[in-house]
Image 1: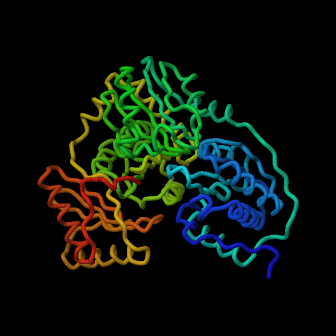
Image 2: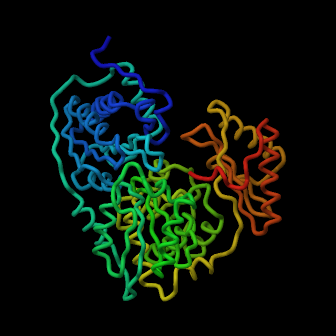
Image 3: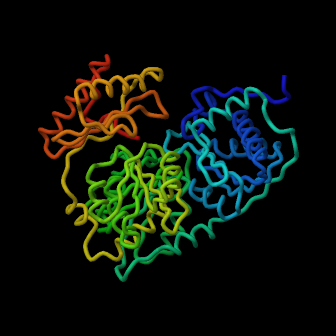
Length: 470
């Protein structure tokens, strides 16, 4: 037997990260093993330096400590940035020129969850990389034990200074409410709010892994009720919310309307395209057709791509796109920035745009073409069945001569609008969404989804959106 060998709970090795319930499917031993194997991968690529950060969850300091021990046992020089938002760790990788980076974070999951997001060099570490890490751990396939080193570095000031460098607002002084949701972006939010022009109000600005105010997922409407009330109370121009590790953003306009990910992307894309006409702008397959149409109208080249932050980052690098976004609130700027998903940076860019506008954000939303859509609908489907169901649906649609985009699952275009069915890469669920010009059209699209699911032996989802989320 090799001197080191470790088996992970198979449910923890996900498509984009390693994630589980602490004490059940994720432990300190897992964290050490991740460090030991990831450090070995970096070492074999000729690297020696890894940045590490952790979020505000109660289990994060323990997991970070064990992770660092594993990295050091593989001979790594570890730069520890402490409790921080995930994008600040990505920034650290560029700032210090590291060969890899690992963030301990449960993102927007419940408090008892935690996990690890990684990058190797400047690229996302996901998919087969994660499966390979599990295999290497089980086989004890690691470099010889060595004595690495670790040191603490506080880069909050450098990160905020770099964020502020790209603020480009006009004369208009905004009134802004921020809600970092007691997540690890809270301290950065307060620092940013103190430096940006205008009036700023921060709620839930203390890092607290119990998330006492609400669950830190700004794509779920009930988690935005508090910020909507605060925007109304303050007469604010907009509200900005982050998820638990501040790599996803949620926006509320001056009227308290939720500005969904694809609507936010319309505003950001129009601005980027002024200086980069013809540029490719990427959005995931769940985004509204309005977004793709508006990108084209603004002189850009819209590209629909697969859902998943690692997949989007890789496609951006391949196409040279200056901007990309997902419905889930991951926004990626490669225009003046580094191409990773960064909610505080996206907030700074949006505030610059709004401060240059003569109209209110609600007026921009009101001027967008009106469509009616379902939320993202998620419903259980066995792991070994979910991709097969999508394949069956695709075959039937082909036989019917339907117009289908199959970049990620099936997105079916009809005279009414479109509907989508795809398998989640991270859970045993199928995801559906539909968008139409009229209520009657939406009902026909929902019936189309239900018919296809029933043909594959599944019940139709609850179209009321009770299971909505990301």
